[in-house]
Amino acid sequence: MEAIQQFFSVNGEESTLMLSLAAMTLSTVLSIIITLVYQLTFTGERYSQNFVHTIIIMSVVVSVIMNVVSGNAGVAFGLFAVFSLIRFRSAVTDAKDIAYIFFGLSVGMTCGLYEFTLAIILTFFASILFYVLYKVNYGKGKDTQILKVTVPENLNHENLLDDVFDEFTLSHQLRQVETTNLGTMILYTYAIRTKIETKDKVLLDRIREKNANLKVSLSYLQSEAK
Image 1: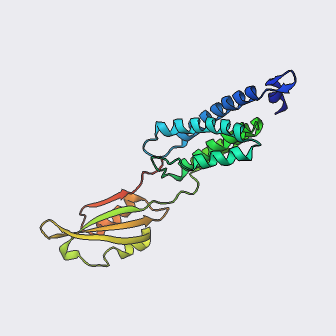
Image 2 (image 1 turned 60 degrees about the vertical axis):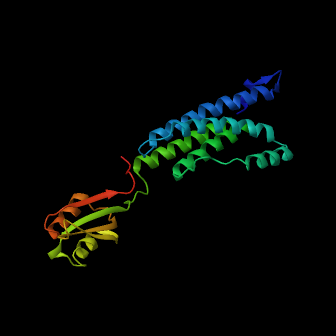
């Protein structure tokens, strides 16, 4: 830390301007590292380029704001009042995206307070943590799935699949019942959560043994991480 501050000093006295430039430069570099980790660990179908840019911009802007409000409570309260009027046009729905926003803000704040060493340590430690959690798939559970089962009218009864559900699912709920094929078939729609060890093909094969090998479909409400 002292070596970095000495580098940005003028005649032995710290130059506020040079330190501010250093804070903005470092926050830019570190926020780019954050966005690279975000892109690497993203598990959805497609991430927003605007969101990536926003993380970088917010990190840099916050570093400047921290320079302005540092040691001045009146300015700090004034800025907080102004920012309270800001509303985002689009809601952030993914909790991980919110975590990355706070990650970028924290790095920007740390740089703005000239805690450069701490900002670097925070970036690399949190980046490694995010990547490890992503690689080991920590905390993964089975998403809710939609199961549609077609049953011949002559085999139709309420408890037809109970033993299958008891063996392969944690929970199941009947969502819809409708007739198909001119009333000769019954289509059941369930919301299910399968056990961790359950394989989709095994589940479908067991159901086909019960419904005379008619159509069975299983879909996910959310895209699973690859």
